[in-house]
Image (cartoon, rainbow, N blue to C red; front, top):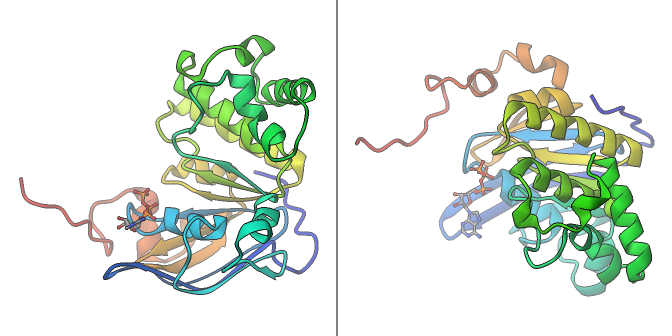
Length: 264
Ligand SMILES: Nc1ncnc2c1ncn2[C@@H]1O[C@H](COP(=O)(O)OP(=O)(O)OP(=O)(O)O)[C@@H](O)[C@H]1O
């Protein structure tokens, strides 16, 4: 598990009453959630329950219909332009599909933010990129390859190196282990723990992978029908007494969560 400093009393991220609908589909129905400094919070929940929409709202990629998202005590809903940029500077993101630029060599993928947003020179940025690649267990020769030449697991490592390159205060992990075999998934979980810990960052993740939850989370929150229906320390996840959580963590088809399935 990631070491949890929990310094200070102001939450790093404080979400209140967050709602979002797409047309008539009400996806978020009033989310209340806090993430403490240096804490790793993992949001779990079934497909289509709004986990990605929640993270995109925090990232400012989707504007919520109502509610508040404070980062270090500052309201971020409605921020645009330079003010949004300033908040974004605190964020690092590991996207589900790695989302690397195919036309750039690996090192430039990692150094992209350093060069484009922070104005770091090419030579210095490359050195930093190679250091970050080393931190995720990839040698300098990998820096010269193109993303298409890498396995899925290596692409995830590169994406993690990119996510940490600008030393973000808050890192978002969107399904970090999806599509990886269990051993590579464990390697990625390990790297997440190491990288988040060494940066002293706060982590907000979404995943279906319970093995990953148990490895990387301090706290877990379960979203269902647009609300947080349970949250607590990861050590309590097996004894919640909550039928929704129990069904989810055991992956049972039977239970209160109904999946809409059309007959064949
Ligand atoms: N930009 C959008 N426009 C319209 N509907 C959207 C948009 N983004 C998400 N949705 C809808 O919001 C709902 C929640 O989607 P979301 O991607 O947050 O689910 P999720 O919990 O992350 O699912 P999964 O685990 O399968 O990735 C879905 O019904 C989806 O179709």
